[in-house]
Image 1 (cartoon, rainbow, N blue to C red):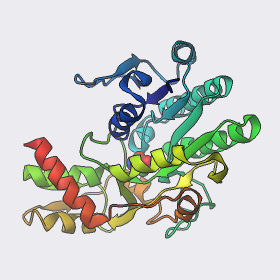
Image 2 (cartoon, helix red, strand yellow; image 1 turned 30 degrees about the horizontal axis):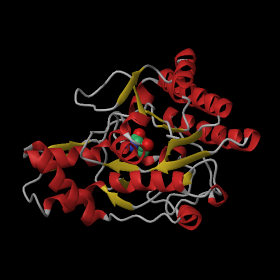
Image 3 (cartoon, helix red, strand yellow; image 1 turned 180 degrees about the vertical axis):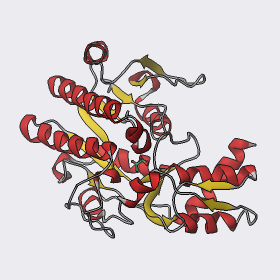
Image 4 (cartoon, rainbow, N blue to C red; image 1 turned 90 degrees about the horizontal axis):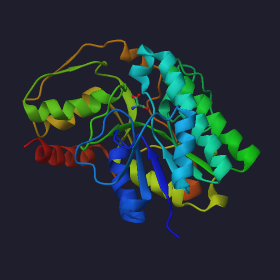
Length: 313
Ligand code: AKB
């Protein structure tokens, strides 16, 4: 029998690359994309439109498709979350609660996107361990910590198969990120190719964990493919690949675009970035289900530029 998959946030930065992979694996007719406002004109697949926080709508969706697996990606990110904290709580927590309740009642498996935003200023800054202090200072981070605990609770209480990754800043060329703090890393590539100066909204020495999207999507699928007895973390796994300072990314891009200029004008997003670690220790993911990244800074920059140049020309 065919496996039915739901993807929420299918047209965001992660979803737009995860959905085609799921369609390849399970067939186009079996992957349901739940979009909200933005629906790409050229989307080719099963489409539904509505809000994840709408309980009645989500219930009807499960009745219609009887999902086996859910990739719950829909979320307000850190910068938007600080502008609209009430909405962030409503969508991030309301959406997750609906997904968990319906998955429990219908025996669906759940993947949920967490983030390095679960960490805060009191967390160890370098090589942040899997189990550590979680005192975030953003509403986004608050919803991610609460969500992690809720996922673990549903696993322990109801035996629901919940799996999750703490994504670092994600670098991709297919779809731009929106409303996050790590967005500067992607914006730089566009400006370099367009021959424009970039005004970076974090300091040059701001260091954060990052990952190329291809690694993030592969990690997501590998986590979902792992045998249940190998999953030792039901909150969310630290998931890491590379770390760089904003200035180091600029230097790497300048190897290809020597004339690329950047000025630094930190805004309110600097506070979010300062509250997150420089690097995280993801050895638990590597031990439990064999996670390994493929892209380092040099390889990621080369591939990003090649793909974006093709896309923009
Ligand atoms: C953001 O910057 O808000 C996200 C994240 C780190 O989760 N990219």
